[in-house]
Image (cartoon, rainbow, N blue to C red; front, side):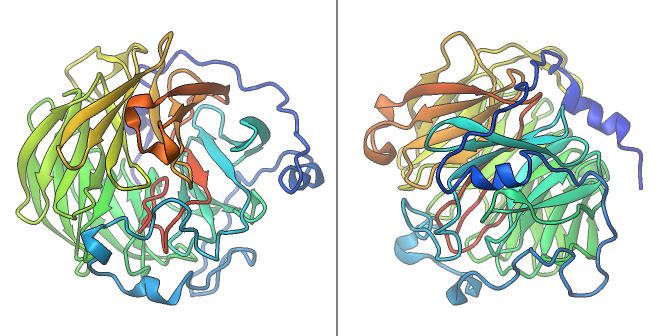
Length: 436
């Protein structure tokens, strides 16, 4: 295993402005939500991993492992040509329908997860996981939320039915991010520092195959999948390019350069399954990629330090988090400083910005997701130690021109890939909730 210390430096660069973790976050007794925190004393910890199972038995008995819905295994064209047809507002699977409406915020600087009640907008708990938690990731079967403890080299399971840790952490090398193949056969651990995409058992996390994407894809970190699940495209932050992967053969198909100074971040496919949107924090906008031909077909300028990408619940718009910094160096890891963050809204139909939501007084929006009804966008404030909640405008986000910042919620240090749960969809492809 390679040394992660140097490769993790880029995550700390430009993020020295750290606030205090919300001291002694009080457990708010809300019917049906906060009771479990009282029973658990409001805290938990599983910073010490236990060995991953070599066979097929789940590591933690409380991790549910059945398929979410029988038809979810069929990967292919969606109704009406809409990739997100099964993830529209209110289309909750029976698997998640009774899960409490919470937001799980990994605080990279604290090694904790803060839990927020979506309805009251109040912190209802916090627990320790492992070193440098980067993202909270819904499993393919919607039954586990995995905390990616990057420097802790482990994954901590959360049971979304209770909002509590479901068992001990599972040892996994360098888990910066986590995805699942569309057929649910494999978990894909994005081992950024190691230049690997590790294909693992989706329940036990036992290693099945390690794909070395090489220094040609230095900084591999975000992924999305084609409509039929045959290929994936991943971003290579420090190499300024993309890598295309044959998902079934687990091999590299090719690389695409985005420019010498490019620093691609999040990536999302459009509802038609044709054009891929790639956030570039150095270019202050989004590259448009024809995935099948693997060529660049356009660019949309949004705002400084473009970062996270999230489709609206009706599939008409793409919310783009602009983290708001100015580049301090032209050399990797491209540190940025500043807090002039905003959210840009792109129309998938016109591929143009139709609205922009500033953050009064400044902010650093990073990663997050949309509420199940589409009315709110939740984003972590990476250098601001808060979570931002945006009203997406109109009924369930149908009028982005009316969108605006609703509130800020203080959390821990360096909040990153938060997950809003539950979310509509038959299954999860990972990250903070790519639902299909």
